[in-house]
Image (cartoon, rainbow, N blue to C red; front, side, top):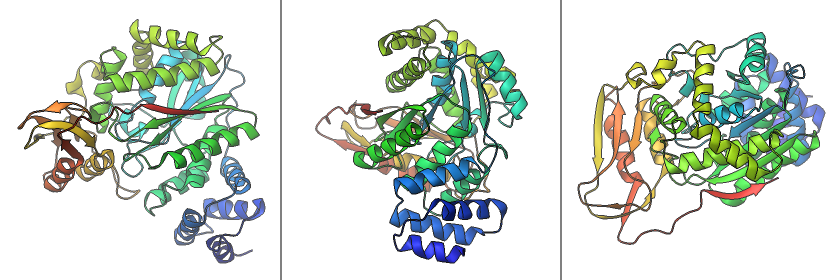
Length: 434
């Protein structure tokens, strides 16, 4: 079979069989199929979609492109959490320690910044010395000892997905529901998990702009899990404004530390506790979800989750003192305030514009080869629904390079909408699937 023929078929909306999908995945993974042909295939999928059978075949091919973890020797139920990506979404760094402190085994394989959303690995690596490149032996040993470890995709775990993940970022195919579903689930199924909690974002700052699309993605991923006998639950959550106040890698680590001290923003705290509770419940630590909610809150309030996070940071080579002494984290060299010229209510904060501005500042990537400036970002001073007076500071921009500052500042200014009427309050958790 020929790659160009399969691209042509998919472009025309035809269904590819499992052997044809495996041919494409294996060929790209081995280097026989070049970037430009796989880019064309990704774009064909973006416009033509995939059937459930194709998505399952793509997931299986990517999962089988490398090794799968065997965590059966570690006692306890293994549960991970994954977010589809949002602006200011640092919940993984809060949820995982809460769940681990409650007795869940949390093998967390995470990604890097993709498009306008931040990546868990980039946030963690803003902590001086923190290593995300653990070997499988180190990963296994740390799970055995601490019940939690954060790593990136190694060459051994779903390597085909790792290559495709980077290519999607630079070919404007990130938002494809079948590609998102298969990417997430191929990694998660290769982890040796027993259960998975998904946070599917919807809104201006998410890849899914419409709730119907977010629901379809959630159902697709829950369905993939069900077909391989894994317990999967998905929360569909609002991403029409940034989560918490901080956007940017080191800034978000500071907010994680505050939240684990039980002093974080209300929306971030509430969502983190609910995600952690569902991990605890699926991990069979408690008999009911309500019991799990109580246990999650206890582990946050009594400091157990913060202690667990510090242990993990130290185990992975990071300077845990940076979680208390923020001057040890990367710090920006400049700060600019953004103020409102009129009084009223904050009716909207376009999360995607905030995310794009942070990418311009250096917090995200425009190409897959680019580095990250961990110090830069934005800290909001207000959230949607709050009343502001003329001249009030809406947010503060932290930067290290003035070259793109004006362009980023303009995006951020336009992201804030001020109106005379207070907007209706939006729910944070919109639906549960699975």
